[in-house]
Image (cartoon, rainbow, N blue to C red; front, side, top):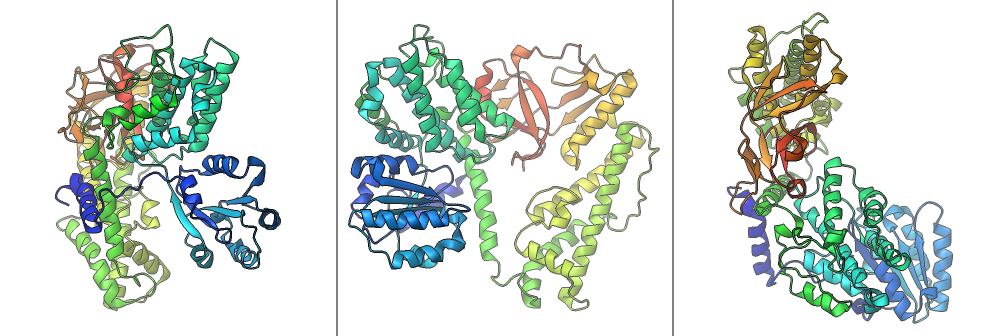
Length: 629
């Protein structure tokens, strides 16, 4: 795409016009309205997406309609089949409701359920609710005989909040008439919506998709409900601790995502966030400036605030930079293009050998490999395995990196040459060639390649990255032999294992300084050379997302700022634990350095001078990269 940051908008506009719709996202699903369309003889199949759980809404609907005691649930899994059938018969006979949950876990059992449904005589009040995630082996007969609905987390902050306040009653909000309690529930609803909607901006918002669901919201509600029952003196540390360790934070497995969550908890669950609290601070904005939390216990006042929110989310609601849409659309564009490539391949590709199909599908990769190696001696270069007596740790690392690079280039060359011979008809098809060709035609990087180097998943990008690094490491070897490596500006993206290089620098520093590696700490600075060390490297080629950096302090991105910006070169070194770093802890924020913008592999953490509140940069998803690809 020429403008990948506009592809998603253009596709949505085209689809809306083609289908005659104002917007593609449907209104929030309301089970109460859906109930009028249901029949006793027709199961209601709710197809759920990760992070969406209809259990609470279904329980509340059942309580209002037939009574909570007449609603039964069975979570399907091992050993639950007989219980489910028995409960089904009883509910159908007595006119009660039954919900069979997670049918995607028991797809083999579904034909037995179909037989029971076919011979079932149902009371007019009976309703059978089924929930399942999307599954390729789900029974097509059961699918056809059911009323099918999708249940997804509502898109957008406004719809998310509206759904929450539709599920809460006026009595729940106004209980005991405590203003702080009603406002705390609004903080909870806003926090829950922000956590869910931030997933639209993966990997800058969250590094991965976390299944925050209505069960988390319900647990948070119970905590706040009990908090205001027992004491007038609200213990916000208690609330934050439970939400972090037991509820929302229990789903997060990335320390930088957990840091974002903690920042939100401090923002929304503190005396500063609640207008009724005595210690209200005017200097801290817990909610966007356009949002004024009502000094009221009426649910209608809170719904009115939500109604006036814009349909499209503003990045400031999440603490994200103004140019986040460009980043998210760029990532979406890459995913769409990758999926289109997969859809465009032959349906029979990889299933069996067809010379014409293989030649057509695999020629681009073979031609690229030939082009990448033109004028290069990598595929013919002879190199012996490194021995134990290679000198310094840095020297040993670079020689090993060169050996592994050339070895991997030659392994891939041999495998592609074998595949080319099969296509030309000069060699027999083997299982290894079959696996290689199947993976490549599926636009996947072969496992045998990834085992040697965990590079990009796209085969074309993998080959380009491999050859570029293999050629670059040759220059590293020359500089090391000439004793000029540490005096030159280095680019860590030229290495296969940049984290190992920094560790080798640590080992060599410990040798030179005559101390243990445990007594050293990592520092980076943009102020000039580091004084408290005998070894340091000047690193260039770093990129930053989430904000901008001029070498002195971080600054906010504007709407028209590039999604990823270059960072000035810096000095990196290992210094004694007791030595003072180049910056004081109060003026810095620790940012992760990832190998790529996909944020799947951390190299090291760097302290960057930020000047103001760390929370601003934490919530912006600020991170450094070795490459902007």
